[in-house]
Amino acid sequence: MPSKICMEIPRFNRGVSGNKVADALRSAGCAVIECLASEELIERVSEEMEPFIEATAFGPDSFTGSNTRRTGSLIARSLSSHALAAHPIVVEAATSILCEKATSMQLHLTQVIDLGSGAEAQTVHRDQWAWDFFPFAEGWEVEVSTMWALTDFTERNGATRIIPGSHKWDDRLKLSYDETIPAEMPRGSILLWLGSTYHGGGRNETDTRRTGLNFDYSASFLRQEENQYLACPPEVAATLNPDLAKLIGYTRGSYALGYYGDLQDPMEALKIDK
Ligand SMILES: O=C(O)CCC(=O)C(=O)O
Ligand SMILES: [Fe+2]
Image 1 (cartoon, rainbow, N blue to C red):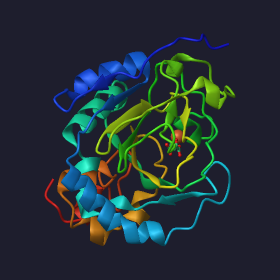
Image 2 (cartoon, rainbow, N blue to C red):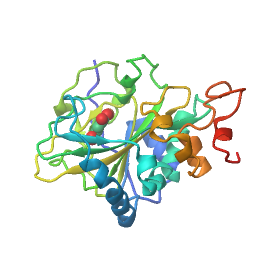
Image 3 (spheres, protein in one colour):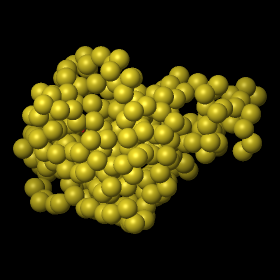
């Protein structure tokens, strides 16, 4: 049974280092960096994504949310989101966690999660269950999830609910909403959590939308949740900053993983200098 540790979400301001955030993730399983992105950048990402959000259907089931829109392919659809995906503090924190055991890490998925008015709370879960519930050993962290607040995140509008410290709990627990706390944060802030931390989307009791930008990172020996080669095909990837192209998967995931043709590196297909 889980121990009921009463823990707060560690909070930082934008001057924090990625390594300090990684230490907070190791101890609490989650952390918030307040107002990390400028108003202007958040506004541009929101504007670029709005037509795609409007064209997105609501989720087909209760996990994805029948009043929630999930809009992906951020790297191809929103130029301004690149600065968030490759934010140096976030990349440093994710690398510190994921490269303890893996040789490299990758962008695992990109999506805007837009909770409409009346959206129900999501089932409390671990993001790493996406790998078919593979029983990763405790402390073997393979995923770092993040949520950038494109609107303010409040308890009433469905701020992500989280259980600090729960990355050390048993696997496959069925936990209730009442055991979680809301990760409230102003627009432009980011919540980070581990793939092993129990959490879920909140319930939107307001008449406005709660919009978050969810970028997850994973150890690059694992299959990505969002297929980046379809979401961002080679002709689009060739226009990206080379470091970003590598981050989304256009490089080997380790010595043997991800080559094409006659042992060629994916970056050769993009004709970008390594
Ligand atoms: O919308 C949220 O706040 C969290 C969503 C989430 O945890 C998920 O879809 O895996
Ligand atoms: Fe999740």
